Length: 297
Image 1 (cartoon, one colour):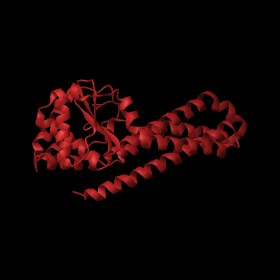
Image 2 (tube, one colour):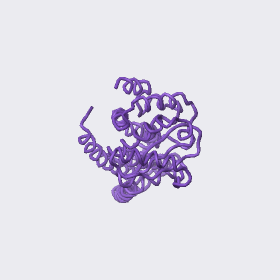
Image 3 (cartoon, helix red, strand yellow):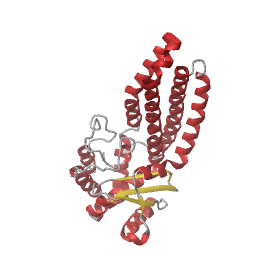
Image 4 (cartoon, one colour):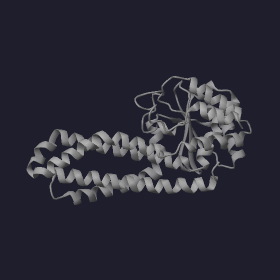
């Protein structure tokens, strides 16, 4: 198992690298857009794109958790609404030496959960109603311990920011390509070969942007899930609890409607259940392999 403190430092560095890469991609999109629709002003549009990317990066750092929770249609769970869940999370936090995160819930019978936030002091664990009421206590403890490990390792910051930034890149690339398809041909004819080249760049962006977005998410190594599983087993002293939970989650074939391609990598197991190409570009390691590792402890 890698050194946890080295892993935390690596996650913090990866966050900076991803934000910088995001700003570069946005700047290139802005420059290409400017040269296509307003030849000679590509640099000006690139500057605007840099400002936009800087603001987006700032918002993502401080508000990515709120954005993700909003997208997921999650609601905060008051203590009085489910004291048993609050006590369970609080007990695991005491064992882990972490502050208690906020607790949110998605009303959906699909079984899943994720953690989000920018650091342990500003964190949230979000459960589906299906996982809360569908698992035994020891199994749910394993899930909570897994998510607390993501919080402790600063996986939450990296995963939340990637969700927002990847979504922004995909959205802008889509807007840019729509502009090319509906207006780019007329404008580009004025600038000859350059216009034709930029038109091709736009088409390439249309094709590659979903793939690039997926690859960025895959850059969040699958090893983080193995590490969180191992940390959870050490925390609960009962690897079987999480293994049994993963087995039930794997057997649940219900698609979580609140999840999408931008947030799927945050969940404890893939919530899309084979939608599109998710099985080919899955950011999660195979559940059976995770279970086997836990059972070998």
